[in-house]
View 1 (cartoon, rainbow, N blue to C red):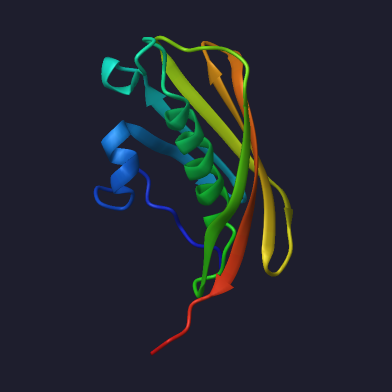
View 2: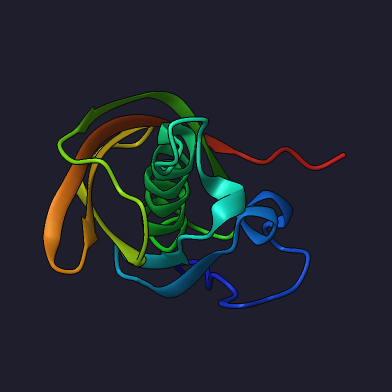
Length: 135
C-alpha cells in the first residue's frame, strides 16, 4: 500500500521548513511544492540561489516517489541534473514532479519549476529504492 506523505507537518522536512518549502500535493507518483521567494534566499547578486531551486526539485522528486512506495520501503537520491533557464528575484515558485519510470530498485523522475507561469528550471533525477530492515 502506498505511503501517505504528510502535508504541512511540522518536523517532517526540517530543511524544507527552513527555506519555506511547502509540499501541497503528493499522490500516485506526483507531487507539487511551492516556495515564496524572500531576501534571505537570494545570492550576492540579488537573485534566488540555485540551491533553493535544486532543493525544490530534489524534495519534489522524493515526495512523488515516496507516495508510490510500500510501507517497508524508503528512497534516496542517487543524482539530480538541473538546467536553469531564467533568474528569479521575487514571486512564488511552483515545482511539479512526476515519476517517469520506476522499477524495483531505481526510479527516474522529472521536475519543472515555474515562476508566474514561466518555466525557470527543469530537473531530472535518479533515486534508489530499498527495503527497511527490522532490528
